[in-house]
Length: 192
Image (cartoon, rainbow, N blue to C red; front, side):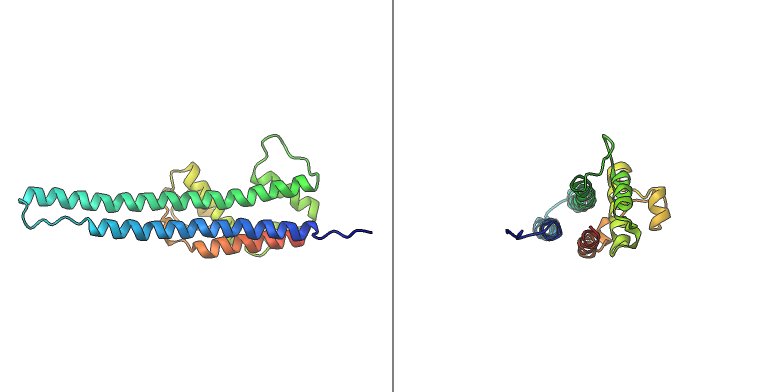
């Protein structure tokens, strides 16, 4: 009689931990990029002592424009990270549906996958550990992807903010968002 070395729960837990480890690595790379970009930016500060006023003003504008470009670039990276985290959750929903032979529509999205899993497992994802942060990161990703990085009405309803305001992705606690995503998915697995 042969015994299985790993059961589906154990294997799925390994997948979740690996996926969240990759997400953490991406976040760390974004932070490292910012450190490097700021150091290079600061090192490129022009010496304006020998410039005319007009040249010094132009040099200052150029220097400040570069700082703005770094800000926008990091915003884009973090917005993309939110999309990636949400996609990881949605893809895991889809994989669980497939493993459990749950039929999905041709272009099933987050909502359908979640609802079908909840019905099949007899649970509500609203009761799982980390749901608040998973919801937040999904909404952050949606605002980035579909609303030019600005707060939309769904974000206001679920998280707060003023509709139409630009989201400052820099103030989010990405470590907590990633760790909460891992906890959420591990809690989901415990119900399979």
